[in-house]
Image 1 (cartoon, rainbow, N blue to C red):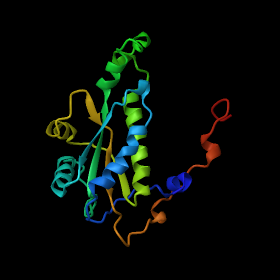
Image 2: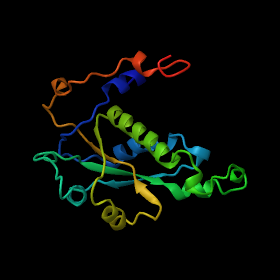
Image 3: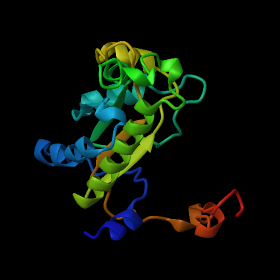
Image 4: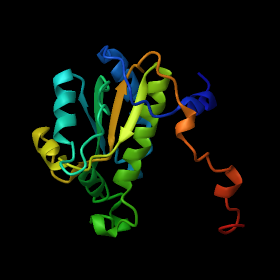
Length: 201
């Protein structure tokens, strides 16, 4: 599939067929994340894959917010697989403590003007979402608003690392078409986003 066609096909899929995704297909999708850019080539992103129905159910139940629970039917057709992109801040601090990088003074997180460990993980997420489409899968990205510490503890995620969203992957449920009428706001025109020389220039 051509790149621009792939980008135009990208949208969030929220209803999935129950059939599993083979490990070969999953690894093929996740392989592209290795090619995401990273500051200092730190490569500080990891991915925890939950591809068993019991694991997916556990994750959905654990992260359901007690005060703002999931909408009825929101996970009636859950993704076959959940990928947790893990942002590894310590990997960046260690990388910038080495002789070739220490002169930049970025050995402490507070010295970074932007948390590039999160930014780079976000770029890896985008590559995964695009690769999923290329494999005939649907992708859904959402955030964790409850239960994150329990998830990190249960999955033995090292200290200093955290999730940057949740990727749901699966084959789109048949017969469910993308309903454009749900979106009253259209995409902004390009010339409203691009500013030459200065904001509004």
